[in-house]
Picture 1: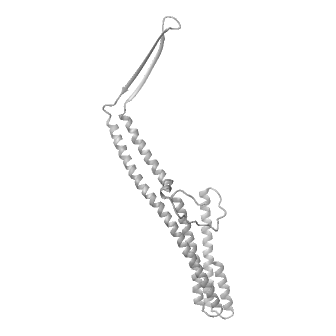
Picture 2: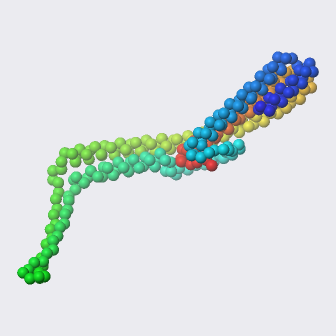
Picture 3: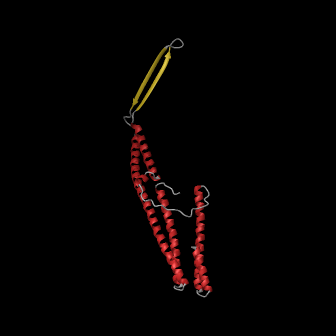
Length: 261
């Protein structure tokens, strides 16, 4: 974009020097170039900060950033299978398993207890003793009247388990919806990117035709400048669509715990 603005400035300067263009149009073209220079400097500063942030997150220096990034559309997706691999789903499963274990642990206060003990000894008047005796005892106890705390604990953890099941069901639905939403948003952004590419190609062709007409005196400065500005705006629009598509791709991979190389 900056190169295009510089070329335009050089063109208008030549026409101004030859008396074919007025000073106001020259100043306007130079202002457009200054804006393009500022936009580039601002983008470079943003990139510098983004690289610093990424370096801090990765714990290593990020010197280079790939300029060309390919975007591949996922044609189909097994949402039910992906659901089970998402970090949120795995966490929800662990939470309900924990609630089930806590509930099962409360049954111990109502179960009978069994104990087994034994003894073995030798006795006699001589050494070594020659009289041997063995004994075994088995005891069984059952809490006929369990304490109030046992009953209360079981009721509390039963309620917690029921709540955990409800939370799990709700989380599962939310995660499933989030997967498909991220999938559709990614595809939507890719379609938008294709439309932006078509629009840019059309705008570029119009700009070429307009430049030829302007140089041959078949159109005025205002019309030429309007088409040039439209072409540059389409270039900016394409960059925004690419950015949106990359963010949508990242959200799609993040939704099920994937990654982007």
